[in-house]
Length: 569
Image (cartoon, rainbow, N blue to C red; front, top):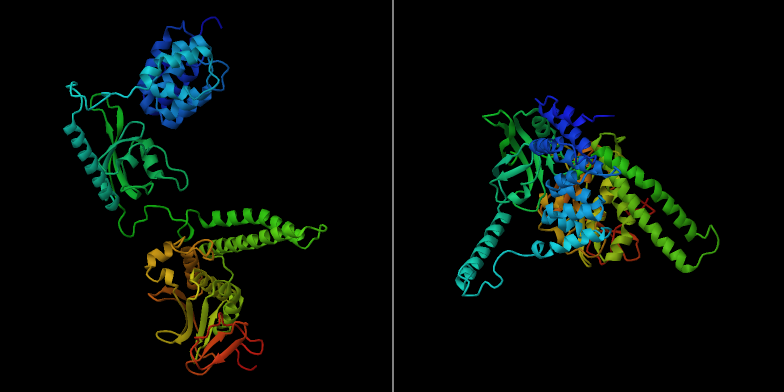
């Protein structure tokens, strides 16, 4: 090619729309990436790039800078241009670009102190670049202000009263900041530039707001705006009650409903940004996406996660079991003990995956439920027996009390056992040594026939409200390591969902967790002990029925092989 007129062609293209200007901007960056100091149009091209830079999204500018690293040679003036941009744009470029020493010596004086600070972390720069950086050390590392604010001969310095005034202002700031932390924001106004980045707001926690972008929708559950605000920005259109989420580390954290209108220069008609306002979502509004049972993942995502984790987990469990049983040959006792520990941990993780998969099935209404008559007394005895080792390890006393006339519940037997097992194991796991957990089975017929299983709250959560219980993950003061793996809140929400899918409910009463199950109207009771009787277990694990309240020093009530509740068969 005898004459290279590509820059002239790019500069001469029509740029009536924002999309056209963004396309030309990227084309000019591509053309200027080739060294060509003698081209008289380069200055005009750089002028055009600086003029349109605000209309190009920051992500596009980052990508353009990163693409330069794939070239065999990069023009130093283009690197200098990108160094004028935000740190997030030029930092990857300066971390990977390579020049000769004389080029660095010409480029470094034109960089900002921040850019030079990034270069100082590189260990592959030539000696010429290092000497140039050392020459700017005296200016880049200097903190402006008087060396000694107490010098009385420096009239422009700070005197002792000035220091006291400054300290008073710092104390006032800290006090206001503490008040702001305890009083969350309820509304604020904001302004965003032509690139969509919020540059001003009047919120007390403005540090968490300024710098957010309304130009791009936040991926997944990340903090930012939703697609409504991003789509309106691309169309330069107003939007109303779009969703904005901010990290919960200040008064501005949480969910917001934002509205905004585009702004244009009255003289030229050029788009200049947005002005808008934000408010907290009203009751009933869903301003933030909620995942399964309050988590950040949907049911499909959790189901896929459980499937992907279970495959390697089964392989680990199988290999550990082979070592424990010495199926591959003799193994030292220490190896077998370690394999047994690994096998126990994999079983715990497998139970967690079962909970996740079951929660996903509840959300997707894909549970295969077959309602049948279930003897609640026999169910409680069977679950109590299974949990007897856990109660013994924690020295917890569990007393089962069966009221006379307790009928049969009508629900899926497997679902009923999962609900009772998870709820009882969570309560026993949170109980303190020596604590007594009362479990009462009663029947009610107003307004409909129901079987009520009331499980006393552990002392650790006796004062928790309903919201605190449903959001509880790690309970303060529980150091026994037996609380639910996914937290008490997840367990309660899962049991509640299972109960509702069976036509029942889980009620978090002040002193107990009450599981209400639909009962058969005229079903014959399979277990009718004397009034006031209870079922308890001796330390040896045998189940007994007595007319005295269950106040023995035994642990968990269990089922007697001779009968469902300890009565003769």
